[in-house]
Image (cartoon, rainbow, N blue to C red; front, side, top):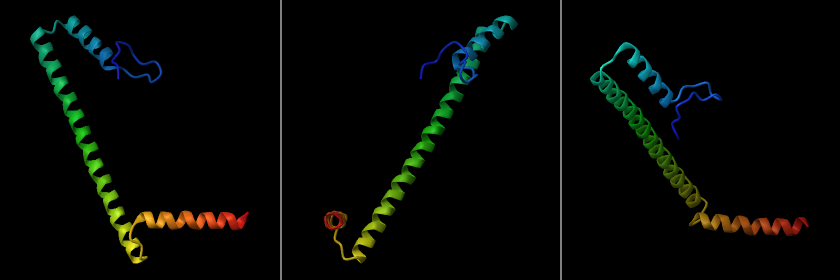
Length: 108
């Protein structure tokens, strides 16, 4: 996503670029030293990286949970198919399609 120097008029929110510009204006006004500016920018960058890292970790955890749920569902399906005497999901689909064709022909 591109960072612009202006406020987003549709959302009424500031962008990173516009907030940085505000920081620079304030720093110029109060006479903030280059050293203090650099420290603040490094701190902001670290905080930003921390947020991204946390969000990536959350997404990875969600992915693991979804994959586990899928694996559990596959196991449950296999157990049900076994209980019904089917060897695979393909057998159920094949039987369903055959039955659908028969019902369709009878209905017509």
